[in-house]
Image 1 (cartoon, rainbow, N blue to C red):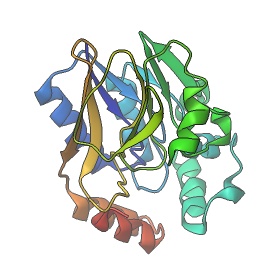
Image 2 (image 1 turned 45 degrees about the vertical axis):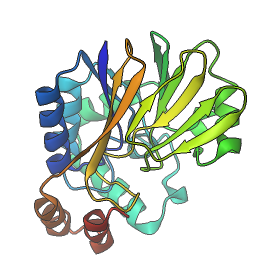
Image 3 (image 1 turned 180 degrees about the horizontal axis):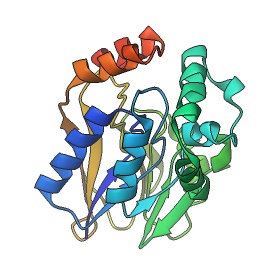
Amino acid sequence: MRYAVISDIHSNEEAAYAVFNDIEETGVDEILCLGDIVGYGASPKACLDLVREKCNLVVVGNHDHAVIGLTNKEYFNLSAKKAVEWTAKQLDKTDLDYMSSLPLLTEKEHMILTHASLHKPGDWGYILDEYDADSSFCRMGESSVCFVGHSHVPLAFEAGKFIRCIGSYSQILMNPKYHYIINVGSVGQPRDGVWLSAYALYDSDKNEVELRRIPYDVKTAQKKILDQGLPEFLAERIEYGR
């Protein structure tokens, strides 16, 4: 099976369309979404519609949870909080009910899908180093790979004889005897210094993961953010991948 694994669209319609078009051209069996469909950007409803139409499995992210009132937005920075409050006003009951129905994690084949750390997933912890990864590896059971998002930075960890950080990656050939945690980056707001949208292709037959970077119309996405009166910072940062 070939899977496209996407995360953190963050209401960036231009980035979402670019990524879904690339997925269609590349060809996959299923599309898996790791949450944070909304937040930050100016097109929450359009992005929700795309995910509902195109994704086979979806888990919830912390911004999705904040919009529906299940995560305290007071923990967010001022720009993120304003975007959450604005987003909630743009969505109807069908949209809110859909996000409310999404699980914190799900499993498929030998995969676990979740937005943040497997260690208390509703606490939205980050996996940034081997210590963080260890807490999640302990909860993987027999699953061989866990796909995550949340940090917006593509990063991979391997648990074999010991836990090691593979770091940023373009392609990983996984050892079938080992376990892996793979962050697929962000579609709508990358933060690794590269403005290009990120997502992962996973071939479960070949045990291969490929990171894809896709250009999109940043200027239009920025203009939409500013036109909606959202914080200028949210428009600026997507140009620089920060």
